[in-house]
Image 1 (cartoon, rainbow, N blue to C red):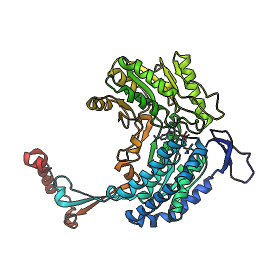
Image 2: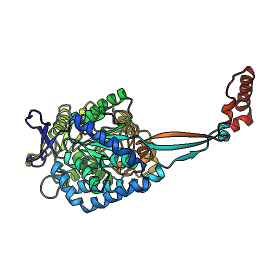
Image 3: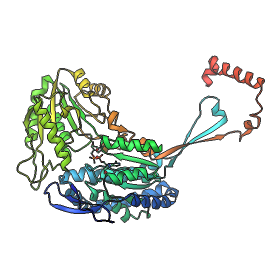
Length: 511
Ligand code: NAD
């Protein structure tokens, strides 16, 4: 994807969307928009297929993941071509962000889901331990609706799908209308891997299909996308009392301390800011650098940025995926310039290329009055602000509605952790950028407007289940024989017991 334009409607037929490449502006295809009826039919098929899928052992479900992994390894070049045709992203971005990460997710959950979802026997507290056995069981929710964005169209579709499937759910996946073919590949892959009919259905379409999916009667919605749409999804889920996870936008800060290795920090800023043309939810969106090292840092960032290539056979910074995003980037840079920011390099659409290319841009003299420091730009822009000290850096890092990720650059790990834990974000990377999503052990999620819930980590996988508490009476129900009738003697006995339990030393130890 791409650039999406509606096709002239034909009475009685499904709506169609025309797609064009953001790199060449040439047409690359058309999709039919799935209707609410299509969504309901897919739900019925998923409901029918899910019990048998859930009845398989986790190891048996894992076999489908291993098969999908083998197919993905074999067909990776073909998949990369689809991603690139739709998004124009560099081959290395496609391999690293989409293929490598997808292989890792398939293998990770195939190998570890049994341990993570194993029933947990836990000792109850106090005297209850003598009376009851307690087991926590993870059971699938049923049918999960997954809605994904365009910036990581394959990985952000397949990773939640793998987790939902491994937990025993059926899945309805609605990829972005901007990158439908990349999303559809998730369905093709699992179909080739032999996944039973109905367990996974990919529904192509736009917001209308997404809204129909949220409202169709699924048991959970796992949404990744913008804050505005996330809020709408959450409102609809609230009305239905449906659980949802919301992986939303970010405005990740980077803090460069005075003791940082400037060579590496400047490399990290450029990679973190311009990877996937800055269209990464936890890309580096703003930089705070301690004044004493700011000159050298900025000089190296500009040098490195000017060495990046755009267009041609091999390049680092591809096009912006669609015109709406390009407009936001242009508006943020124009607003910054109007308010006194200085552009050191870039700052405009690439005049030499036909597609939606925006030059990698470095700005200084930026302030928190500017959109570029407050709202998600989601483009190849790196605004850098000098700060007096670390306290000022942390204060500014937290001066945002978002709270997805953050990076801290210093040669002192203690300092990094001290600063990192003062930042209100779901994750912090020290001396690295954009790694958290790939560290599958780490729960990935945002604070504040960046979302609710997690993907990845034990918590992420278990989020596709409900926790069922099973309490087994050790005396096989004996005490219920004498529950009734109530009496003053029973009450007095209970009060005496409470005074012993929480009113004496021995009792407190037992409690
Ligand atoms: P978007 O919100 O416009 O669209 C996301 C998905 O929601 C698409 O599939 C779209 O068709 C669908 N949709 C649109 N309206 C809907 C509705 N009313 N009901 C249900 N679904 C609807 O987001 P986008 O522009 O595709 O993605 C970019 C955003 O996603 C950025 O803000 C980025 O930061 C965020 N993002 C977050 C993460 C994360 O993990 N936190 C990862 C990637 C992207």
